[in-house]
Length: 177
Image 1: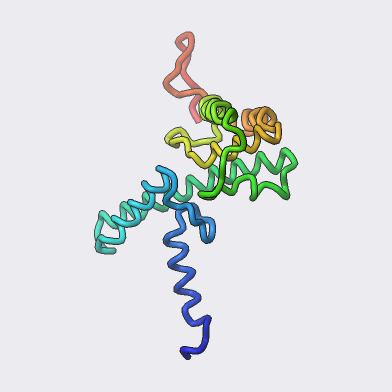
Image 2 (image 1 turned 60 degrees about the horizontal axis):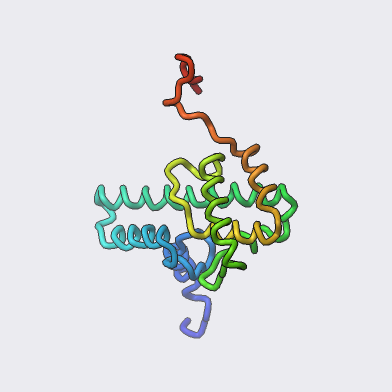
């Protein structure tokens, strides 16, 4: 009946999930960062295509892959933070909204350097990953908590940088997996 406030509940959840670019319910920041805009634009283009078309299927796969990659990266960060003892705070440490700010302007340079160091010296981000602005805020929080160095050490152990297959030292072949 029209008096039931829950009649459209399922449809609302489906719409929210479609617009939820970070796979976090009701994320209002989904178009705030450049990487969010890329994903949003992919969704807009896909939704304008015929669902039976090859282009729609390709875009749908790319959207799914990007979302899964983001989930995996977030899961890696969460795992390390929990191992460092932030079990209760992990969700708030990883939560970034358009209201999030850098705690100290002097930390911005440190946070950028730290994020680049993580990307270059660990495998916490996939090789094709473009560094996300979201993790700059997370690193800022780690610096403020004086936990950045411990985070890096743990990331280096849990997600060590794998040697490149192209690098061959002393004429020896790189090990095959």
